[in-house]
Image: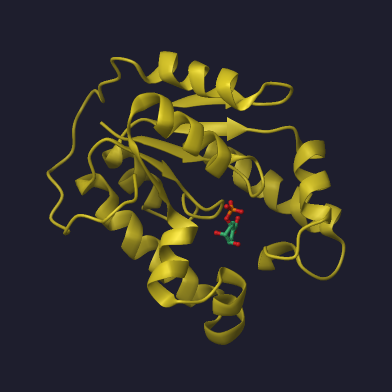
Length: 185
Ligand code: S3P
């Protein structure tokens, strides 16, 4: 089984994913880091050189390969479940868990951030809250939602472990055809 973490930027998916992977004895695939390593540049550089649509295409290509993974915690980028069809691909990889962070905590982190191109320049609060509102209906379609505010990584990871234990999708979809993705342990 895999566990897929979705949620807004700066909501702690990578840190929670790392802790979760350690506790489960799973690999961790951080989708943003994977794309950065494959391309040899940062997401911000990629946005600048090739534009957002190119990045989204890479995300979708990666999403298509995720169902072939085994025993992996998949930390997605905040926009990965948004493109039509991507949430279904994520569901095929495993139970999808929405990490629901407190918007004020998110904003505090984003206001200090220089790496996330979606919120650079202009009014970070306005841009981020607008995006969050637009995306919430999609994040909310996750199999499980875990509120992370005021909880440490260990407690959040423990909740996820209890939620996904014994998870089985009601109607499994067809077997994946894409090659497996290499992950780091
Ligand atoms: C994005 C989120 C980022 C990264 C890119 C775009 C988004 O990932 O994929 O900057 O559109 O929400 P994090 O959620 O890890 O910040």
